Image (cartoon, rainbow, N blue to C red; front, side, top):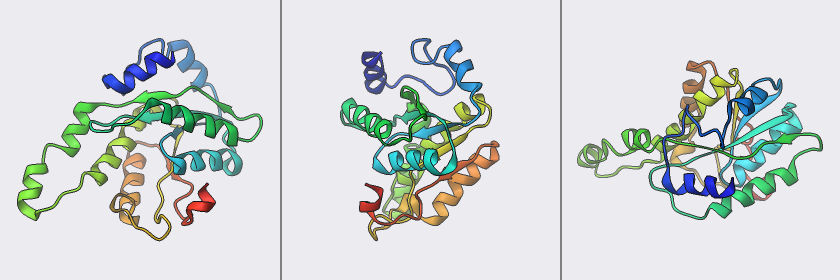
Length: 203
């Protein structure tokens, strides 16, 4: 199974609403859908791990489905995700169920959102960043899964400040836009660590 997940990470097939049985079988899907306090959680860096732990400790979620959304440009090692999953498992309260990692993504969708208009934007403004569009993409890709599972909440590690530093994709107006996007489809996108400024506290 781990080898197959690594292959998905490398090959980046369409993984938004259709999944191989080895990754998400109908039986597993139905078991997940039957859970009352289930949340889809983002698995990326330490902020997302902290948000998932906070969801279990403070918000009463008892079943967490970790998801990783691949993009069209990322690089890195699959082992980083394995480490993040293990760190999340270690930090959860006793009795909280953490499921295996579910990869999601659509490279064509990512390119449409983040690549199609780069030339036009650079021509107009002399500068462009794909950070906001990329975060819109990663939040969007989780929405169909949350809908399929019964409109469950999505837990994200977005933060307003990072030890005093501001990121354009995590401005207050950007986070509000991500929330409105999810609300439009009847899903809640929760930013449980958005006001935690200190990196040491997240750690």
